Image (cartoon, rainbow, N blue to C red; front, side, top):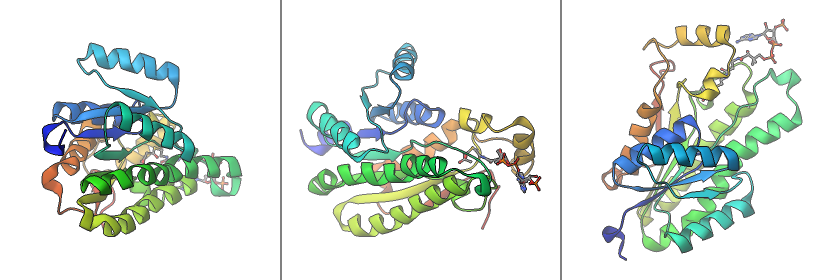
Length: 249
Ligand code: CAA
Protein backbone atom coordinates (compact mmCIF):
# COMPACT_ATOMS: atom_id res chain seq x y z
CA UNK A 1 0.00 0.00 0.00
CA UNK A 2 1.32 3.46 -0.84
CA UNK A 3 2.21 5.82 2.00
CA UNK A 4 -0.80 8.10 1.61
CA UNK A 5 -3.28 5.18 1.41
CA UNK A 6 -2.55 3.73 4.85
CA UNK A 7 -2.41 5.06 8.38
CA UNK A 8 0.95 6.45 9.47
CA UNK A 9 2.61 4.08 11.95
CA UNK A 10 3.87 5.76 15.12
CA UNK A 11 6.13 3.76 17.44
CA UNK A 12 6.19 5.12 21.00
CA UNK A 13 8.84 3.69 23.31
CA UNK A 14 8.08 3.41 27.01
CA UNK A 15 4.44 3.62 26.03
CA UNK A 16 3.02 2.26 29.26
CA UNK A 17 4.28 5.21 31.34
CA UNK A 18 2.33 8.41 32.00
CA UNK A 19 3.65 10.42 29.06
CA UNK A 20 3.66 7.42 26.72
CA UNK A 21 0.03 6.58 27.46
CA UNK A 22 -1.08 10.14 26.71
CA UNK A 23 0.96 10.13 23.49
CA UNK A 24 -0.56 6.86 22.27
CA UNK A 25 -4.09 8.12 22.93
CA UNK A 26 -3.48 11.48 21.27
CA UNK A 27 -1.82 9.91 18.23
CA UNK A 28 -4.68 7.41 17.81
CA UNK A 29 -7.27 10.17 18.25
CA UNK A 30 -5.47 12.05 15.46
CA UNK A 31 -5.68 9.06 13.09
CA UNK A 32 -2.22 7.51 13.45
CA UNK A 33 -1.71 3.81 14.07
CA UNK A 34 0.18 3.96 17.36
CA UNK A 35 2.38 0.99 18.25
CA UNK A 36 3.43 0.64 21.87
CA UNK A 37 6.83 -0.54 22.99
CA UNK A 38 6.94 -2.02 26.48
CA UNK A 39 9.52 -3.52 28.79
CA UNK A 40 7.66 -5.18 31.68
CA UNK A 41 5.24 -7.94 30.69
CA UNK A 42 2.85 -7.74 33.66
CA UNK A 43 2.55 -3.94 33.42
CA UNK A 44 1.99 -4.24 29.66
CA UNK A 45 -0.86 -6.73 30.02
CA UNK A 46 -2.68 -4.52 32.55
CA UNK A 47 -2.09 -1.47 30.36
CA UNK A 48 -3.43 -3.20 27.23
CA UNK A 49 -6.65 -4.10 29.07
CA UNK A 50 -7.09 -0.57 30.41
CA UNK A 51 -6.46 0.92 26.99
CA UNK A 52 -8.89 -1.50 25.37
CA UNK A 53 -11.55 -0.57 27.94
CA UNK A 54 -10.94 3.09 27.05
CA UNK A 55 -11.46 2.30 23.36
CA UNK A 56 -7.82 2.03 22.22
CA UNK A 57 -6.70 -1.25 20.69
CA UNK A 58 -2.93 -0.86 20.60
CA UNK A 59 -0.44 -3.34 19.10
CA UNK A 60 2.32 -3.92 21.63
CA UNK A 61 5.92 -4.98 21.10
CA UNK A 62 8.56 -5.90 23.66
CA UNK A 63 12.06 -4.46 23.55
CA UNK A 64 14.69 -3.49 26.07
CA UNK A 65 15.47 -0.15 24.44
CA UNK A 66 18.92 -0.07 26.06
CA UNK A 67 19.83 -3.17 24.04
CA UNK A 68 20.65 -2.67 20.35
CA UNK A 69 19.79 -6.25 19.36
CA UNK A 70 16.50 -6.25 21.23
CA UNK A 71 15.41 -3.05 19.47
CA UNK A 72 16.44 -4.56 16.13
CA UNK A 73 14.20 -7.58 16.74
CA UNK A 74 11.27 -5.34 17.69
CA UNK A 75 11.63 -3.13 14.61
CA UNK A 76 11.88 -6.16 12.28
CA UNK A 77 8.71 -7.63 13.79
CA UNK A 78 6.81 -4.36 13.43
CA UNK A 79 8.06 -4.07 9.85
CA UNK A 80 6.85 -7.55 8.90
CA UNK A 81 3.60 -7.57 10.90
CA UNK A 82 2.43 -3.95 10.46
CA UNK A 83 4.76 -1.97 8.20
CA UNK A 84 7.50 0.63 8.16
CA UNK A 85 7.72 2.87 11.22
CA UNK A 86 6.86 6.35 9.92
CA UNK A 87 7.06 8.13 13.26
CA UNK A 88 9.38 7.25 16.13
CA UNK A 89 8.91 8.79 19.57
CA UNK A 90 11.90 8.09 21.81
CA UNK A 91 10.08 8.45 25.09
CA UNK A 92 11.39 5.62 27.32
CA UNK A 93 13.39 6.87 30.26
CA UNK A 94 14.29 6.32 33.90
CA UNK A 95 15.71 8.32 36.79
CA UNK A 96 18.29 7.26 39.38
CA UNK A 97 18.70 10.55 41.23
CA UNK A 98 21.42 11.24 43.76
CA UNK A 99 24.26 13.67 44.45
CA UNK A 100 27.13 13.07 42.01
CA UNK A 101 29.69 12.46 44.75
CA UNK A 102 27.64 9.42 45.82
CA UNK A 103 26.48 8.30 42.36
CA UNK A 104 27.31 4.66 41.60
CA UNK A 105 28.63 3.59 38.23
CA UNK A 106 25.51 1.37 37.94
CA UNK A 107 23.18 4.38 38.30
CA UNK A 108 25.18 6.37 35.77
CA UNK A 109 25.30 3.47 33.34
CA UNK A 110 21.61 2.52 33.65
CA UNK A 111 20.41 6.07 32.98
CA UNK A 112 22.77 6.64 30.04
CA UNK A 113 21.84 3.31 28.47
CA UNK A 114 18.08 3.62 28.98
CA UNK A 115 17.73 7.32 28.18
CA UNK A 116 20.43 8.00 25.56
CA UNK A 117 21.73 4.77 24.03
CA UNK A 118 18.06 3.88 23.53
CA UNK A 119 17.66 6.86 21.21
CA UNK A 120 20.63 5.68 19.12
CA UNK A 121 19.33 2.10 19.11
CA UNK A 122 15.84 3.06 17.95
CA UNK A 123 16.88 5.75 15.45
CA UNK A 124 19.53 3.49 13.94
CA UNK A 125 17.02 0.69 13.32
CA UNK A 126 14.28 2.86 11.79
CA UNK A 127 16.34 5.36 9.83
CA UNK A 128 17.16 3.35 6.69
CA UNK A 129 13.56 2.22 6.05
CA UNK A 130 12.52 5.86 6.54
CA UNK A 131 15.15 6.97 4.04
CA UNK A 132 13.94 4.34 1.56
CA UNK A 133 10.37 5.66 1.72
CA UNK A 134 11.59 9.28 1.76
CA UNK A 135 9.49 10.11 4.81
CA UNK A 136 9.81 10.05 8.58
CA UNK A 137 9.32 11.88 11.85
CA UNK A 138 11.59 11.33 14.85
CA UNK A 139 10.74 12.96 18.16
CA UNK A 140 13.19 12.69 21.05
CA UNK A 141 11.71 13.29 24.49
CA UNK A 142 14.40 15.08 26.47
CA UNK A 143 13.85 17.24 29.59
CA UNK A 144 14.19 20.73 31.00
CA UNK A 145 16.93 19.09 33.05
CA UNK A 146 18.86 18.40 29.87
CA UNK A 147 18.79 22.14 29.20
CA UNK A 148 19.70 23.36 32.71
CA UNK A 149 21.25 22.00 35.90
CA UNK A 150 19.27 19.97 38.43
CA UNK A 151 20.84 18.92 41.73
CA UNK A 152 20.95 15.12 41.89
CA UNK A 153 20.57 14.48 38.15
CA UNK A 154 24.08 14.43 36.66
CA UNK A 155 23.30 11.14 34.92
CA UNK A 156 19.84 12.19 33.71
CA UNK A 157 21.00 15.68 32.61
CA UNK A 158 23.92 14.20 30.67
CA UNK A 159 21.66 11.72 28.88
CA UNK A 160 18.93 14.26 28.13
CA UNK A 161 21.41 16.88 26.86
CA UNK A 162 22.95 14.16 24.71
CA UNK A 163 19.59 13.41 23.14
CA UNK A 164 19.37 16.88 21.68
CA UNK A 165 22.94 16.58 20.38
CA UNK A 166 21.77 13.50 18.49
CA UNK A 167 18.67 15.34 17.26
CA UNK A 168 20.69 18.21 15.78
CA UNK A 169 23.16 16.14 13.80
CA UNK A 170 20.69 13.48 12.67
CA UNK A 171 18.31 16.26 11.59
CA UNK A 172 20.77 17.74 9.13
CA UNK A 173 21.93 14.33 7.88
CA UNK A 174 18.41 13.27 6.85
CA UNK A 175 16.83 16.64 6.07
CA UNK A 176 16.88 16.00 2.33
CA UNK A 177 15.13 12.62 2.76
CA UNK A 178 11.76 13.88 3.97
CA UNK A 179 12.64 13.08 7.57
CA UNK A 180 12.46 15.52 10.46
CA UNK A 181 14.13 15.04 13.82
CA UNK A 182 13.14 17.17 16.78
CA UNK A 183 13.46 17.28 20.55
CA UNK A 184 10.78 18.04 23.10
CA UNK A 185 12.04 19.13 26.52
CA UNK A 186 9.23 18.78 29.06
CA UNK A 187 9.48 20.37 32.46
CA UNK A 188 7.83 18.83 35.51
CA UNK A 189 4.74 16.90 34.41
CA UNK A 190 2.30 15.07 36.67
CA UNK A 191 3.72 11.58 36.07
CA UNK A 192 4.80 8.79 38.44
CA UNK A 193 8.41 9.83 37.77
CA UNK A 194 7.84 13.32 39.15
CA UNK A 195 5.57 12.08 41.94
CA UNK A 196 8.47 9.84 43.07
CA UNK A 197 10.42 12.96 44.09
CA UNK A 198 10.06 13.54 47.85
CA UNK A 199 6.98 15.69 48.49
CA UNK A 200 8.80 18.57 50.17
CA UNK A 201 11.38 18.70 47.35
CA UNK A 202 8.59 18.56 44.75
CA UNK A 203 6.66 21.36 46.46
CA UNK A 204 9.79 23.54 46.33
CA UNK A 205 10.21 22.76 42.63
CA UNK A 206 6.58 23.65 41.83
CA UNK A 207 7.16 27.06 43.43
CA UNK A 208 9.75 27.74 40.71
CA UNK A 209 7.25 27.14 37.87
CA UNK A 210 5.72 30.50 36.84
CA UNK A 211 2.54 28.84 35.52
CA UNK A 212 2.10 27.59 39.08
CA UNK A 213 1.44 23.91 38.51
CA UNK A 214 2.83 20.70 37.07
CA UNK A 215 2.25 20.15 33.36
CA UNK A 216 -0.37 17.71 32.07
CA UNK A 217 0.64 14.64 30.10
CA UNK A 218 -1.83 15.62 27.36
CA UNK A 219 0.06 18.92 26.93
CA UNK A 220 3.18 17.02 25.89
CA UNK A 221 1.15 14.57 23.78
CA UNK A 222 -0.43 17.48 21.91
CA UNK A 223 3.00 18.72 20.85
CA UNK A 224 4.12 15.20 19.87
CA UNK A 225 1.12 14.83 17.60
CA UNK A 226 1.79 18.23 16.03
CA UNK A 227 5.45 17.41 15.29
CA UNK A 228 4.39 14.00 13.95
CA UNK A 229 2.15 15.59 11.36
CA UNK A 230 2.88 15.80 7.67
CA UNK A 231 2.53 19.57 7.78
CA UNK A 232 5.38 19.91 10.29
CA UNK A 233 7.88 19.10 7.53
CA UNK A 234 9.86 22.36 7.75
CA UNK A 235 10.52 21.97 11.50
CA UNK A 236 13.72 20.03 12.07
CA UNK A 237 16.61 20.09 14.53
CA UNK A 238 14.49 22.11 16.95
CA UNK A 239 14.19 21.77 20.72
CA UNK A 240 10.73 22.60 22.03
CA UNK A 241 10.66 23.72 25.67
CA UNK A 242 7.39 22.96 27.40
CA UNK A 243 7.95 23.75 31.05
CA UNK A 244 5.44 26.36 32.31
CA UNK A 245 8.13 29.07 32.15
CA UNK A 246 10.44 27.31 34.62
CA UNK A 247 13.43 27.65 32.30
CA UNK A 248 13.38 30.60 29.92
CA UNK A 249 16.51 31.38 27.92
N1 CAA B 1 20.51 22.20 45.98
C1 CAA B 1 21.65 22.35 46.69
N2 CAA B 1 22.07 21.48 47.62
C2 CAA B 1 21.28 20.42 47.86
C3 CAA B 1 20.05 20.19 47.17
C4 CAA B 1 19.69 21.15 46.22
N3 CAA B 1 18.55 21.04 45.52
N4 CAA B 1 19.51 19.05 47.63
C5 CAA B 1 20.36 18.54 48.55
N5 CAA B 1 21.40 19.41 48.70
C6 CAA B 1 22.55 19.25 49.60
C7 CAA B 1 22.16 18.66 50.95
O1 CAA B 1 21.78 19.69 51.83
C8 CAA B 1 23.41 17.95 51.37
O2 CAA B 1 24.34 18.91 51.84
P1 CAA B 1 25.41 18.54 53.02
O3 CAA B 1 26.18 17.34 52.53
O4 CAA B 1 26.21 19.77 53.14
O5 CAA B 1 24.55 18.22 54.21
C9 CAA B 1 23.99 17.43 50.06
O6 CAA B 1 23.44 18.29 49.04
C10 CAA B 1 23.62 15.98 49.76
O7 CAA B 1 22.22 15.86 49.97
P2 CAA B 1 21.53 14.46 50.03
O8 CAA B 1 22.36 13.49 50.84
O9 CAA B 1 20.10 14.65 50.41
O10 CAA B 1 21.63 14.04 48.51
P3 CAA B 1 21.08 12.76 47.83
O11 CAA B 1 22.18 12.09 47.13
O12 CAA B 1 20.24 11.94 48.74
O13 CAA B 1 20.11 13.40 46.74
C11 CAA B 1 18.03 14.16 45.93
C12 CAA B 1 19.06 14.25 47.05
C13 CAA B 1 17.34 12.79 46.00
C14 CAA B 1 18.70 14.27 44.56
C15 CAA B 1 17.06 15.27 46.15
O14 CAA B 1 17.76 16.50 46.13
C16 CAA B 1 16.01 15.33 45.05
O15 CAA B 1 15.10 14.52 44.98
N6 CAA B 1 16.12 16.34 44.17
C17 CAA B 1 15.19 16.52 43.06
C18 CAA B 1 15.69 15.79 41.87
C19 CAA B 1 14.75 16.02 40.73
O16 CAA B 1 14.30 17.12 40.43
N7 CAA B 1 14.43 14.95 40.01
C20 CAA B 1 13.51 15.06 38.93
C21 CAA B 1 12.83 13.75 38.76
S1 CAA B 1 11.51 13.86 37.57
C22 CAA B 1 12.29 14.01 36.12
O17 CAA B 1 13.45 13.87 35.98
C23 CAA B 1 11.40 14.35 34.95
C24 CAA B 1 11.93 15.53 34.25
O18 CAA B 1 12.41 15.40 33.14
C25 CAA B 1 11.78 16.86 34.87
